[in-house]
Structure formats: structure tokens, C-alpha cells
Length: 526
Image 1 (tube, rainbow, N blue to C red):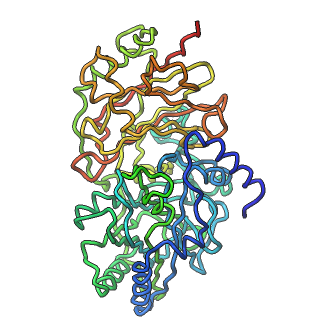
Image 2: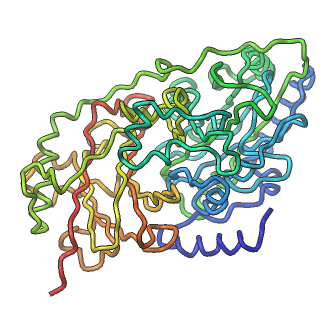
């Protein structure tokens, strides 16, 4: 229910984020439901529904729900997290009608903002159902991915794992291991269930992606996948334009309270048209030209045909161009930055003033869907389409200036899209985001190191004003507002490298170099 308090909180939140830039207020769910697709897709939805009902299946239609920084207050109130979102790229969530006999958990009902009555962004799976998403994909961008996740499940997390011990040692345990605030009998997961269908996967199979009519089937039942494909074939849909995502057998399927809870999400990042208000990409994000059907076979005598488990060995093998040859250059650059600020490191490796990012996808962090699932860990919406580096524990109240220094994946060949973010740790909120295009060329001001075209330097501080000569304009101001980094709060840095060039997945994180954070002090005013 929308309350006066939620309206006030949201208003304050939007005002606090003016400096970040917020997406246009989303249309109501009902308006989105009625107007989100072209007549062609509407007609297709009618014909597909008729074909499925002819086979005796129950069919309901859903809609799309945008979730970004504006929806954080609702999510945080209920879930205690904003999922470390990318503030520059809000999610688009398929929102489905509940089945009449489906349990709806009040503890997660507005986990991603409010929905229409009878609909949910999170849901349980009937053993004999499929969700079909189809329509025209958005305008060209750096990345598009559609992926399903385990969201919550009954049980506890393992405190005797190496991952738990490691995260506890760096003060990040509660971020990745927790129960639901309003239902402590369940743990938060947000763990990937498969390799995603992304723009490269779609391009390779079908010959095109951006702006093309494509079809996606999400199901725990092989029989239902086959049935949907047969109906689509009768509608003259080419096999190459259909993409399936299997819900694996190591999750608990069912509509009762004990069953696992799921969601599916669409990431759409850095559109080529800039994504400004009213642009084609902005219009698509707020009103996708796609439809959602939720389908089930109600025959009780037919057992579901389950897929194999999603295991540690299941994620698609990733590759990378080894960055080890840049290690000495990166270390030298850190030292050169310290000299430029007149705060020279006490040793050439800057070991006392600089700290390294942590590779979250390798031991002992292991932020990969099946590895998180094994120990009850919250993977925070992981994907094999990107590598993730993370470093927590930074304050901004004592004139600190942080230089983040690293290899630039778009220059080394290990990424087609790079994102450097600053997070509000308490809210688990993405407060700032620097695109890879803004990082390019930032290291060229420090000629004492080599391969500067493959490196970057970017600064974070309370106020960049007066630091132009030292930062060369590669600086972002970090406001002391409630929904950025308020006084006394701690922040964390995260770097994402999406889709290694020439592949359909993110880079192998063990072959890339971790970035570094060099702590500096703002020079005293003469």
C-alpha cells in the first residue's frame, strides 16, 4: 500500500539524487499493461494464447516493471537492501500474474517496488509451467541480458564455509549471508540459475538482436518447453529466434509456502542513443515493446520432466587475455599518482597506502550462482556475463580523496563495457557510476609509467572543486546526503567488466588484474 510516509521518503530520495540523475517516473502498471507493445506484438500475444489454450493450458498475461534508484526506499524498507544496483542502468522486471493456488509471501511482496494486485515480480514455479517473454528487443546498447534467479528459500546459510569466514574477516558477512527481515525462516539468495541470454548469444544464434522480434521460454519442465516451441512453429516463428532458459533440478519447485521463490530480470546498459528522457531507449525501458505470458498444464497426472542441476561445473567456460604483463605498469602508475599529489608512497609498491580490489568470482569469495547456492549465500544478482571486483570500507568525512587505479577492460580486450561504481554499503545502494568511456585517457597524465592507454585513474572525494590540477577532471563528487554517502557511513567500490571482446561471456577474472584504491588527503588551502 502506498502511504504518506512512502511518498515523503521517495520525494526526499529523488531530491537527494538530482546530482546522479534519475530516470523518468515509471508509468503505472496498468498503463504499461495496456500500452507497452505494438499492435503486431499484441496480435501475436492473442494468437499464441489461443494456440496454448487449444492444447488445454491455462494462460495469464503479465507486464513489465522498472526498478531503479527511485524504488530503493520501498525495497530497503522491506528487504534491508537495494541489491547494489547500477544507478545508470535500472532493471526491467517481468511481472507475472499469480496462480490462484500460489502462496504469496508478504515478506517479499514489494521487494522490487509495488505491483498491481494479483501480480508479482517474485513468484514460485508450478512444476508444469513456462513463462514466455517475446517482442521487439530495445535499440542498440552496450549490453542486454535476460536471466532468472533463485531469490529466497527456506533454510539457513553455512557459517563453516571458507567463503563465510573470508567475508566475515573483511566486514562484509551481513551483505552476503542473511535471512529475510520479515521472514527469518528464509534466506536471501538472488543467485543465478543459468548462463543468461544476452545480446551476443542472441546475435550468434539468430543473426540479429537490437530491435528484432525474439522469443524467450523460461521453464522447469522440458515438456512445456517443447509444447511452447510447437505452438510458436505453427505461428511461423523460426527456431533460431527462440531461446530457452532451463530452471535446474537443484531448486525446490512448487506453489506452496515451503517452495523456493524466483524472479527474472532484464539488464539493459549504456544505450547508443544516450538514454536521455524521451529517447527511443528510454521509451523502451519504461514501456518495452514485449509481452509476457505465464502458462501451465493443469493435468495432475503428468509428471514434470526436469532439467539437470545447475552445479559448480555448469557455468559456461570463460576466457581472458592475460593482464599479468601490466602488473608492473599498474604498480608504477599508483606510485606516480602518489608523487603527483606530493604524498609519495613509503615504498615503490605503495603497500601501506593502497589496497587491492577483491576478485569476487574466485576462491574464497566465489560469487557464482551455484557456489552461492551450495552455502546459502546471497549472490546479489550475479551473472557470468561480467567479472566483478569489490572493495569495502571507505569513509569520506576527513578530506579523503580516493584514486581508483586499474586496467581498462575495453582497452585490454577483456570487456566491451566497463562500469566503476561507488556503493552506499548500509543501503546496498549503487550511489555513483562511472562508465568506461569516462575512464579512457585518464592515465595519460602520468608519463612515468608504461602502457597508459590500457590503464585508468579516477578520483572520488566529497567535493572535486579546486582539485582540477591534480585530478585533470577525472573526479566525481560524493555528496553527504542520505542516499549517496551520508556522514559517518562507509562506502564500497565495485568494478564490472562486461562481455570479453569476441566472446559471449565476461572475462575470466583470474586472468585480469585487480584494481587498486590509493588513499590520499585533500591538500590544505594556503
